[in-house]
Length: 474
Image 1 (cartoon, rainbow, N blue to C red):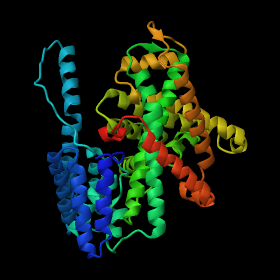
Image 2 (spheres, helix red, strand yellow):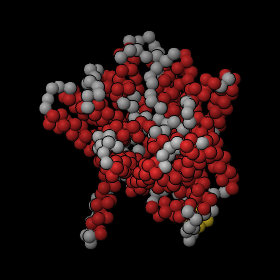
Image 3 (tube, helix red, strand yellow):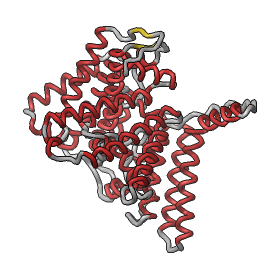
Image 4 (cartoon, one colour):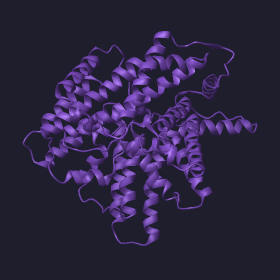
């Protein structure tokens, strides 16, 4: 069920009516739980069993971890949770990938191996709810929270439909305590929640799908190469598409949750205004980057170890982050490039510490533009289906044209991409130290109403096809 569909409009209306009936809080939580299961089953009903299995595994592991026991017992329980959850994730998401690579290795050794075809369907959202249930187990194991007593609350935490299939990855500590007291949105919360829903849909439907997706498909899905300007503008188009698509989903999820009286963390903070790559990952997909930091990078030693170990930890974290996004080596390269950027940034900061010239606005703007351009290079590997296409694009971006070069973008498309990119970078820079809510509060009511009306009309009139959110595939 897509946020940008009429089906969701009817579904959400029904959920809102039930949630605001004068019923006991426990009954209303049951209503939200069953609505969340219904929302998930709209894609492929049988896969709800995987979601239920992940829920039950960590519930019982968490219960066992709350009992007195030896260090070995606790580590064993943690391993059960990791093996079960990552095992399911590995089978569904990486099964075909591992089989293909094993077949290739056999071929390199001169062994002909023809494996049976595995038509494994990826359960939507499995990467997100797997990490979400793991945070519950991790936090109990590390003593950051106590086992929760209500299975209903815990089940709702795992399945809460606004962020179930594409995040943000909500921590147990942040959500479960919201289940203790009855929650209904105030008039102000309802107004702002619906505003966020409109903004998110505008980003997704109008900008990502309507303006940028056709350009991205023309450039990246064409086997022919493209020229210097076309390659860069194609990368700019995908940078805008992936942001507006994913940030649009997160904004919708936060808005829908707010309409129900729940709070969900921000997942994006205007990342294309980042000055450096550490800053970028504090602004991009915050729920994933903070998960990797807290549950992988810091346990590995973080930056409390030697420089070499710190660089290894950074690189390993980003490689795993890349692989999390998809079962393809292009995603690993994407993560590896970001790891290289982070290591290089640490090296440069030692040679040229922040301060002095770094504090000047022109230098900060140049650093932000440089960060954006380097990030756009990594997006090529994220979007390209094959290494041949990725290297062809990178070659064109560096001025080395492929033999079958051509211009895959029309002049009107270049104008659209150029205008959207400039507007996006300007808005991100102006908003880098504030929030949407703070900016809205400073805007006259009549201007807010006009902008929202324009967005709603643009959403309704958008001729683009209904596309699933990009991160549904992860």
